[in-house]
Image 1: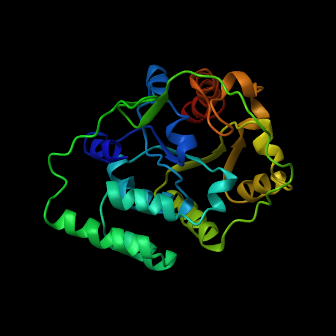
Image 2: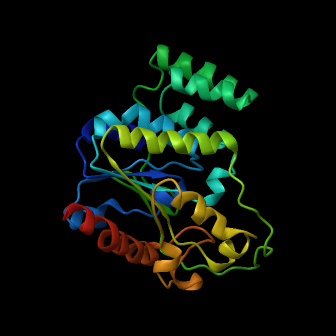
Length: 266
């Protein structure tokens, strides 16, 4: 995330801005979209919830001036309290009024402490000179925000309990989503909400999976690619919610054909 944020200064006026949780930065390979002649940037982050999505869009949408925003809205992100993602942004981006506002909303001691320390480092320029290694054991950061996982297939050792989860968005996450819809509309930017493919076990872990579809469809232009693509859990994923590179290629090709080409040909 540190590297991704530092790249923003050199990425203006893009065709497409991708935003959302790890399904975003591991799911939308900027190289595939650039090869199809779409300028783009991936602003996904770990465990990002609508609360952080709204913050990032408000903070950077004027810099990017995207024609299209593609928001990967996983149902789990709307049920997540957002604390992990908020800590990630405080550590790797900046502390400003918006982040302070989120801190008071979340009422978490770790966030208060991180905000104070982050503000200290920001005021005294303590992050200058730091350079993030683009390569880890299994991950490679690609300029433009995508993270490529070393190719492997998914070999589940157990299935999650069927119907163990119920889609019930937290009120403040629902409010943040409505802010995202309003912000993009006010800027004349087309918002596409999508669900990236996940494994069958992940879908079946919800007792009311269709409720998420109804929720998103009622608020924005929405596509659930679990219905569009016939992917195999053991071939196209590296865990229950993340595509491997083989799955990424199929997913991104479908996004280009189903969403971007029709929109940009209007």
